[in-house]
Image 1 (cartoon, rainbow, N blue to C red):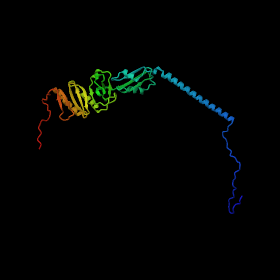
Image 2: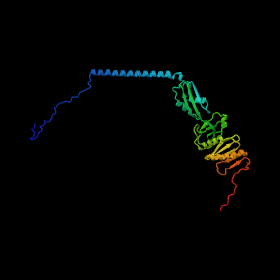
Image 3: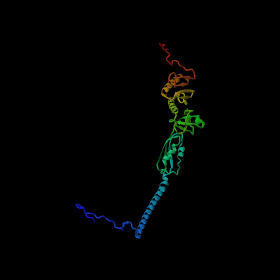
Length: 318
């Protein structure tokens, strides 16, 4: 070992030397032996047995539950469909609505999907909405709101013809087409809406044309004004996008504009009041013109004492 230098307070360190042939020892914390392998095999068999027992128990519980559900609920006669009560008014009969549901006496009310049944009913073009109730005692109640027709729709382009042709189609107040399979006396008395330029004729879907909805509003207002001594409304014709022609029995045609109906109806009321009082037989009347309304008559009208216009002469211009 070399001597320490003079004045140094630190002792000299001997350099470390590695022993030749020294080996690193690794400790095996999971030694392999026949006894240990036997213990591990026994433990694996125990875990497998417990897992098998749990699986068997679960299968038994599921099986018992399924049998209980099948026997006590699905096959229980208490929940089978026995009667169907239908509350509705319209063109569809009770038998047609029940047939549309596709239900039979083997239907279980407990497992029946009410949403699917309601969707089947509402797919009918005559149906506006439906509500279904079940009481789990074999009774099913259908509350169906049908589209109530107010007029006939005629369009030769879509083969919508008159009511007696067998190809007639009704329309409700919302402008939806309602197929008609049985023509009743009440339906025959309804007025007609004639629209040759109708773009769509999908049953059960409200029509998009503004002219159709204007014709329905005009028809409603004219029917409220109808009196016993006044001609009855037979048809509203839509000849173009801006006018409506109301046809009354007695060969009377009144032309309205599709907009601003109230002022036109006020002038219509004044003319009809005079027509009833003076026994006029009006042939045509064009209410689109707001000034000097054109009118024609089947016979020479009696205008005695009627102030038709200001006949005073206007002063000459200066």
